[in-house]
Image 1 (cartoon, rainbow, N blue to C red):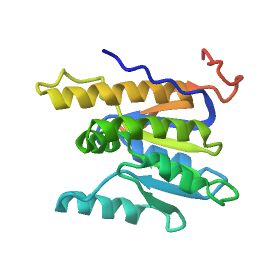
Image 2: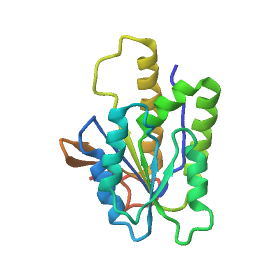
Image 3: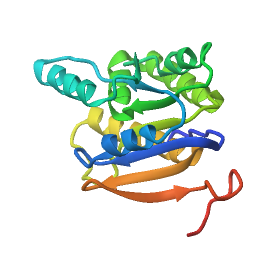
Image 4: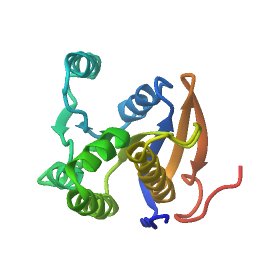
Length: 195
């Protein structure tokens, strides 16, 4: 049974989606670099093994030193609240990524999953600054064989749909090339352009 996730439209929020190694993080970082406010990177990854530790170090080395960092493997709502506390101007937040966050939540248990997902959606709807969200597109593959993977794909797919409704701009990276799926920048909030 599909979970309904609804968020109000935000005029400064962007969702960047794509497959593995599609260039979505690089695209999100380019968007963040064009922001006229300081950037805070919100990382959901955890270094569970040597390969992931190396991957995290590479990402850190490639980011500008001026960017802030908040590590939030579970508590994304608190990370958004922390970024807003006493900051003027509000930082542009780059959240990378929803797929690791959903995986972390599923392994933390049902109660944590439901509470953190709801809290994140509430905090995101309240954050008035620019937010760039990176997420994997899971809808272009076969149905998984095991229940946990099917649940992961369902939950991430539903979350992506809610975020796409909420964000004024949705982009997909395919082979390193940006594809604009939605851009309401030139229209009134809540009205999508048909270009």
